[in-house]
Image (cartoon, rainbow, N blue to C red):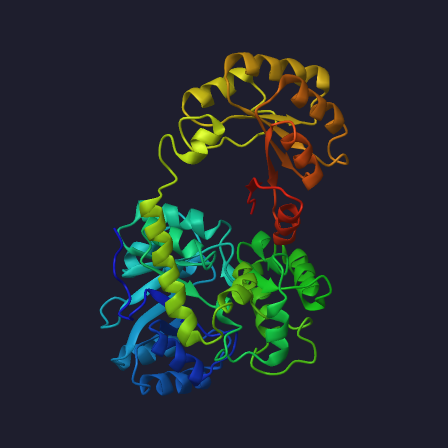
Length: 463
């Protein structure tokens, strides 16, 4: 059951860009119905206090994100109640920092940002009203696992409201709300809106982001951070080398963070080179240009974003794809619209495939790079046992020297379905022409567009 955690009109909170605050941006966010949250990270104490005072007099609800070790600002909040401060988000860099942290007994609603699973023994004494799961996709400090995994774990292991940060796209938000989250957090998705205070050079860079322009540093030290990075971004390479030299050192994670803080840039100031600047940017940054397709004003974008989530949920209610004998299940010749992906050295067994099919799903035989003499009888026996199954193929000859033989075997046995990992559109079309329904793994947007242009119509949207 979804639990209400925000008093804003929309269950959406929005953070300011890295080391950048602009009152007009927060005004627009609030006017759009979301909760603007001032992320204090990298701001000097006096500037934090000044901005906090400005927001307290703004006349609308706002939030505040602060580190659990920011004792000066925490003490200020304990001593002074701000009626419009609707939510305090407490963050940590290492979970052990929660051992001595307490904030109960104040009038403020507070939530805890989590990047780890199975730390309820540390969360419960803090007594937060909710949790923000900050997944692998999120900018800055993030988790080893995706938001989707973190979300599922906490929805199943806590009674607290759950908010998701990372992996929130124009369409994925509907799935998150369907799963039971109480709100979502946005940041770099809105960087191309008119009101967002990024310098023009950064907006130009964000407008051309690809899915590979976000990298993580620090995971080997127990605290990963996600940044913007192109191949030629030197500072990210320097930090990566620093991570290697710090491995095994006492307080390595803290030392790396200090190095990060010393190079972090305000995104509102024009840089000498945006590509050579250090700033947090999540995998969601690639969605920024999609968020402004209909309107470039955050006052329009946020309500439309939430309206679209509602529309997607309504479509699922009317056309639920996850039911027995659904259109996709009929297309596959199975009882359920579920596919068992090919797993090398695991799903190359006819008996296993038969069990999967009997349970209602579509099994795939993993052909991998197995010699033809080994996989030939496997396909033949599977065809005898079950009417519907697929062949998982590695289409690139560099990784699979036997691909030509594998294609011949798929044709020979009349395998009903196939999928290519690392294949090309022409291979798909070759099998489709023979009546073999064939999927193509497309882990990049450009690959998907190219495949569509080449006439492919079945895709595995690999992350």
